[in-house]
Amino acid sequence: KPEEGGKGWGKAVGTVRTGFEDAAAFFWDVEKLGELSLSKGVKRIVERKGKGFEVEVKTIELDKKREFFSTMKLHKVDTNTIIITIKPIKKQGKNKYAKERALLKISKVKEKETKIELVAKLELGENVGEWAVQESLEKQLAVANEA
Picture 1 (spheres, rainbow, N blue to C red):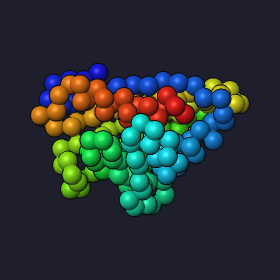
Picture 2: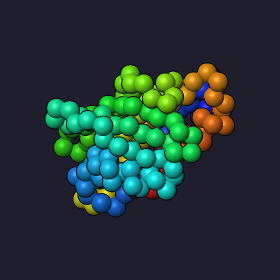
Picture 3: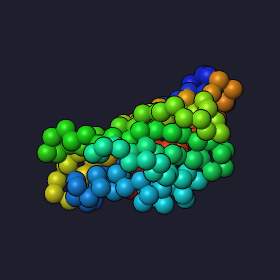
Picture 4: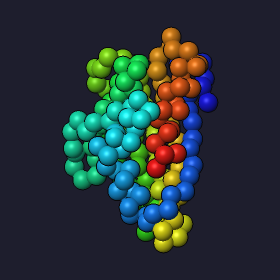
């Protein structure tokens, strides 16, 4: 849902036919996720690995040359739920206004069935139109739909 001022948010929900741990490992593997996202013109790169389950990620929308710098953290809530948070970090990129926040919830439904919920919020800058925000949101959320 695009909003005024170059901001917007969106949600993607789906179910994958794989085990809970496999689904979490898939979304945590930034390089593999980056390969999948290339079909939508989005590239993801690990910039730095932190302590434990924390990495700094650079996300690039190739056609717009828009860059997002984020910290990605994995949190195990209970035996059936893992949450991955993505929060912006301050780094000078080609577009200093682009910020990405996201929450990915991975929930075990059955032995080989896992629910994926991805909520993303983007801030692209005051001068970015609603259509551009919508396009960017669709690219960011596509990874949950294609998993």
